[in-house]
Structure formats: C-alpha cells, structure tokens
Image (cartoon, rainbow, N blue to C red; front, side, top):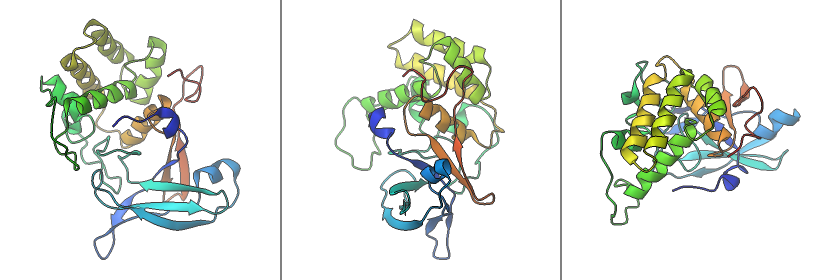
Length: 256
C-alpha cells in the first residue's frame, strides 16, 4: 500500500538492533533519548508503552517507547525496516548484521526490491487475486507501487542535479544513475524497462557498505517516503539522525 508523504512526515522513525533473549523472544536495545531530545538536549523520561504485533515484516512484535518529557511516542524498528514496511530494504539481520558482503543486484532478491527485480526478468505479477491477509500473493498493483517507490528512492525520478546527490549517498557513479534515468524516459510505461533500470543501479552499489540501509533510509526521507531516520548505536549510547545532504539544500527543501 502507498501512503501519503504528509502523513508519514509527522512520525518519528527510530531503528535499533533486536536480539533474542533467554526465551528466544526478539527484544530491542532501548535508547535512552528520543528524537526530540536529540534536538533540544533536554533529559528524556522514557518508558515502554506497548508492543505492536506484526503479521508481516520482521514477523515479531515491535516495541513502542514513550517519552514523558517530550510527550511523544515512537516505534523501534529493526534494521532494514521502515514504517508500514512488510519487507526489509537491505540484506541485514534484525541485530544489524550485514547478511552478505557480495555486490550485485541478487543480494536484494529477498528485500523490497524484489518487485523490481522480477519486472527486470519480465515477470509481471497477477493482475487480480483473492484477498490474502498475509500478502503472500502480491498483485500487479502491488508490483507497480513497489516499483514506483524504489524509483523514487534511488533518485531516478529526479532532475540530473539531484541525482548526483543520490549517487554520492549510495556510493555509485553518477553516470550510472543518469543512464538508468534515461532508459526510463525512453520506456516510461514499460514495467520491465523500469525493473532493468533499478537492477542496473543496484548492481553498482558496493557490497562493502555496512550502513547501506541507513543510506537507503536517508534517500527515502529525502523524497518523502518516510520521516528522517534516527539510529540508536548502543555502544556509543547515541541516537544519531541520518541526513541526506546536497550541495545547495537539504532533505526538507528538496522538491517532491
């Protein structure tokens, strides 16, 4: 399902490692500060509010934390996931471990990018389906929606001057993004062509990027897919905002 960027922008996104406890339940590393506290420096008063059951996505309950000082609540997501995300964006484990150091598009086969990779192979999902509450049989509409989001995430729907910033964030040559975007203009309504453009970009992303999800999340926030990402780093005891930067502006003023 696609969501209104204006609604998404009013929410906080905090990512933290989830690890199995003694009872094999997935529990998060709890931050000691909220996103608003990062900005104003006031001491936070955090407590566990409730758990959010999940049928999809990481498939274990997510913890919601509330701050009494700042009157705000935020969900703790495991690395790889974003609000309403049923699939992860990068090949990482819930504790943040990178699942592969190899490059190439195939490492994204089990991520949100699989709709685009399927389209690149000429595989178009069914146009009609019976209701499936577990979303195990996604439809053509879902494939279109996912493909549209990844095109935005990778900067393929931006002017050339903006694509350079996306290329820098993703550590790929700007020319690769420009060529992929050019292919989209030649075949604007061809799902397979769009999928191949995405695959070409993914092939260029280095396999050694341990913070690949954070880079994706910064790009997604820049185009309004979700709010700015904060990552809790337990060993540093820091809640760090991951920002998308550009030589002339920042994510807040980037045109949609």
